[in-house]
Length: 486
Image (cartoon, rainbow, N blue to C red):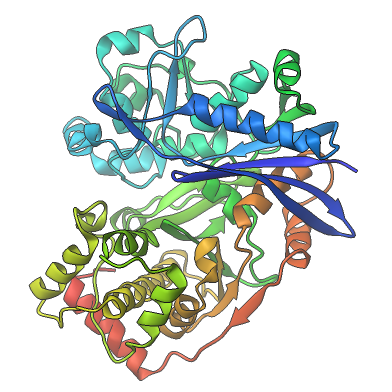
């Protein structure tokens, strides 16, 4: 029996899961969970990557304590953030977080030298102010002169484990520095920010064997003999691989967490003015696929409401409060940058509703219902956009991630979209992370095979509600109030 270790690190926490295949199911066991978050240091908001590495090693020691002598490890994290290394393979400085304000206005400034349309034609990637392209453009010239290698976060952690430098393609594609097709970094864009493609390593595919963990680390931390593999190292790419979809049907995915990422898997990228104007992106997936998707601020709004509300409620309690206020309707465009990191989310939503001449939500239930209604309608509108762009009907949407636990939002999504909603797995990122390595290791022949085993390994349910006249009226009101354009 082969033992697999999946490391999944998000912006607020990380977890390490031990897994194996048994009776045609993927069996998982969480062995370690730890906090994550950026700190303010030296004038920037930065990640403590050495701490993350120590937590991975700690987890591996726990794996050994369970009787595992040999394992296959893979790491996924968020995208866009990077580590700068010098010629001695040492970190040049702290690793700045994408939420740092250093990129404020940088994207718009960059457009003065290269048009938005041109950048999209070259890369196919959506425009977010914290994309790696704009982060790197803020670096001082003396720093750029000292850089020998650039690794994204999971690539750096793999390097610390094995001593081998790689750039995994699903994460590298989020940088807005890769050609939309092929495997090359874009010379033109890199030249614009005074860097060269040679600073990056040849992109590798998910499921590629990187190497054995350093023996000195194994001895120091008392870990199993560890073989390090690349996976879909961008967490959304892993979540999409872990989605089960609807076999023999055209289905969309919705990775529901702090961010909501909604889209479809494609064999080819879609790079046209419609995709550009609507904020869609062509990020890489496993086996040369593309994740054609857009970002929507998701559970972040609810997380902030919980933080900013004077009384501490659990998330299930907040859902119950929303359900008790089904008479209340107000709508907000959660894509508006004002909701990215407001001083107070409660007040920001209330001000937005007053500015748009709507009833102002006052109670917790009214505010949370406003968020869930708005999210469900945004999902429905995004599905309409996907159908228009691809000219194909979408029969179902597979909701994965922590947000899949929210039955109320799932039902609203089915109601406003008229689509069948497939719920789960909630741990799609872990299953996708594992599956890429299992495919690379010969456990599964195809992605379809892996997804069938993932389906068997989880309690997958479906919701199908009828989209009635009232639902369509609400959508039209939402579009009018928010000035939403398709």
